Length: 127
Image 1 (cartoon, rainbow, N blue to C red):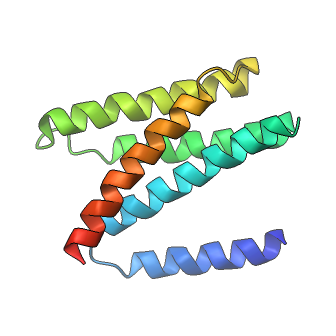
Image 2 (cartoon, rainbow, N blue to C red):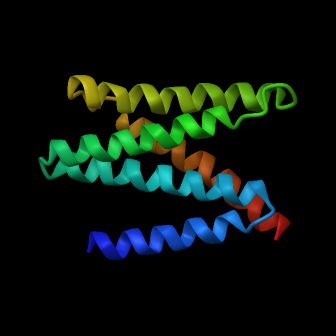
Image 3 (spheres, helix red, strand yellow):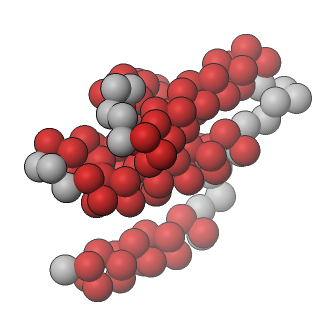
């Protein structure tokens, strides 16, 4: 099962590299972030803490990449707000990875879902 997923992921990544719209790339990253947070919470619910930590680390890496991609010079308050929100997601996943604390994960998923929803509207509007 993992092998199949890796093949699809590589295929999706190859397709994204051909896109000229950075908004689509950000949307795909946000979608991945959201999925990893969902998988983290589901693994915790099943008592699979190591799997949860693996997914949390992947979510954390995506949030970090999104944070680094912000245009702080021209982004104004939007970039500042997104920086704070991605920082919150990083904090929530870090708490689980380092301290086994899941207190903020549900909120991180909510934040991720809201950002994803906004980007989805932006990408659909442009398409």
